[in-house]
Image 1 (tube, one colour):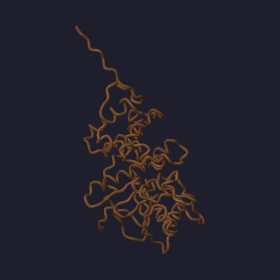
Image 2 (cartoon, helix red, strand yellow):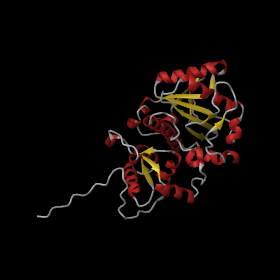
Image 3 (cartoon, helix red, strand yellow):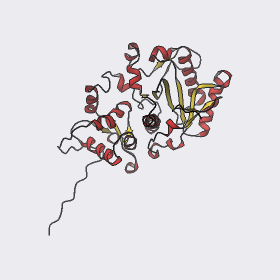
Image 4 (tube, rainbow, N blue to C red):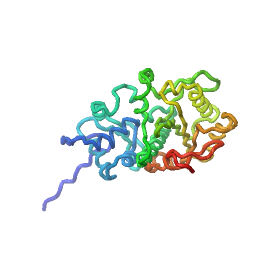
Length: 317
């Protein structure tokens, strides 16, 4: 009686090329590589939501590309081991060969600032897990809004690479163009760098993902003052070549969101502001359990201080 040899399973966090080369397709380029050129890390769930292919097709393709001959994708599990690794969604980073492919096709600029300006990877949280949680939240919200805008037929979404590419040459020459100088004012940082930057038609938005780990007085209020100043002084005009900016604060608790709104109320003239928008997403508090982005944050109402709610899709309440 013949016995079959059990198939060996490839290590999850170690590339094991089979020697068989697969052709890199446009779906790989625009559904996987391109979003990873703008985000430090994206999970399988996030990439499946962004890619236009069937979910099973994208999941299988991510596995194939990771184990493919060449440096197409890097998994975070190569560098960091979670105690419950079997239940944590795999996180991917753009590989060198994939980056080269994007540059050779002119999909992303060849300048070094493209890497420095990626969403995530710049958090200063003391814990590696806290940094990952913050970066995942920033990417989650940015992707959610992008997916919602993509599904709408009457709006044009532009990501931060497109905005920076159209900025003045002096801005593009900076190591990280997303870091904006703040004119000297009391109780504000010298530089302000949003977690993400994007545009919907001619409206520009900076994103601040808030995990509740930063002091309202020491960190949040200075950020609010800095954003107000770069708009009032027209620094944002000279830096990015844009004439408007709204700031989206996303918190993981209702109490935290209300505390940030009170901070704006105390700083803004007459306690009212149309510049700052607020939303609460408790389900993003733990990145290992976060749902897939589905476009809801583009379609939902955002709170404002002293004014009616605001919608990114431009529809009236």
